[in-house]
Length: 618
Ligand code: FEO
Ligand code: CA
Ligand code: CA
Ligand code: CA
Image (cartoon, rainbow, N blue to C red; front, top):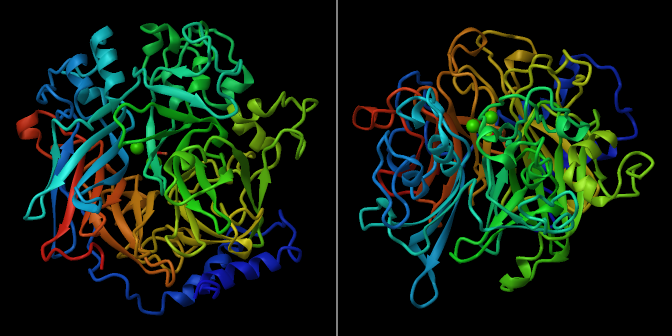
């Protein structure tokens, strides 16, 4: 079974062998590009056996809906106390209150089970690590952001970051937060427990007035999606960090700052007016200390969070880590901005089962690559190493640290494929299959820098698609891969051209803007959306943001969940027995979960169970 080729691999390997026949960049119309998904058109006629629930209709109601036989409870909401002695939630909470509470805008998360006294996995006790990506200023303050002062700014900084807390399950299956556990921690935008690691740590790019060592960082920001390692650590991903930095109007912006969207003037948060390190006219290097993948050991409450410079600095969405057949740790990563890229990290050292101390060093050193997708279904990983692929001093690349700190500039220089906003990446639990959501891109086919191609095949792409690839010879260290589009989202009720989507989309399961993406242990592919929820115009018939399940071998997709008004669904993890699934509901805007009592809607993590206690999705 191990070496037997799976159906999808044969399809994608055929693409690899075709590579010389069709030259990249061949002019093909948009519909011609969509021909690539025809492999799924025949597959969807087969039955799927991995989903035991019925597709649910869309919803425009301010509630969570699930298939018949499923229920949910809210586990934790923004402002709930996490640390010992923390205050209860109130819209009048101040910065100090927020420091001990669950942050805002829940996003990526993982569950780490604890052990029983005799060393077995404890199915009913675990540590949860949850990202708090950003804040909803309008709901965060009683003054709705109209009277920002130092306390309000610090409340916002403390509402960002990572939440670590213990959870337990009672005899009836209900999960709850253990509020006073010694494991509970808050990492936020002001925390002292961060160190830079890897090649760029301690270099001139990292030194600031407050930290001449270039290794000690105050905090983490814009923690979007996540990843986890087989050695039991959490990977939190710093995404849109640029918005926290600003400078007086007219301050000169370097090409490196521009590449990451850093701008002078007030900016999204205006924190720089209160805290000097966010003012890039005074502290240009502080921004270099954000935009990383950060590894956290949830089991050690004294441990420092480690920013992994070897994985490159981009607007990190999430990571998908897999151990290659030769033992190397492979990390796939997307950079979520229109026209940015998909990356791969290959560790130098090899994974050693059971040697946690050694494994915790795997993300310190390795090789970074960026993806080029050819129109014939083949692809190349281009190495981002100084001295290779034109990344030389003469071409403006001073050294390897420059490439790690300004990975976007290197990726663009080597001719990587500009993508339709890479969001989450997911690796299949047993097959050599990796997928990435390309959420949408209104510039595609409109701006010259976003040309149409086979992997980003539609102009003004408001619906998004999911790309899938397999490495050559099932070896994730190979620089060649074959790819296809697992799904092209669309609206077949309104369109009969490429905007109808691929063959596995119909008027009953349609959606837009795939974002969160994860496999469960059985290989069900969970797809979460962060798209237009107006249910009007080209989005009519799609309703509120939602979560669907895909069968990766047949292409079938069914809707499993719909969220409340205004929210996106993002963040997913499972209890070991797969009988509870935890899902994040980010930025609801109306009354869910309980504005009648709380005064405001609150981002929350929910626990989904089956009424009969069965495996979720089966
Ligand atoms: Fe934080 Fe790209 O989503
Ligand atoms: Ca996202
Ligand atoms: Ca998104
Ligand atoms: Ca979001």
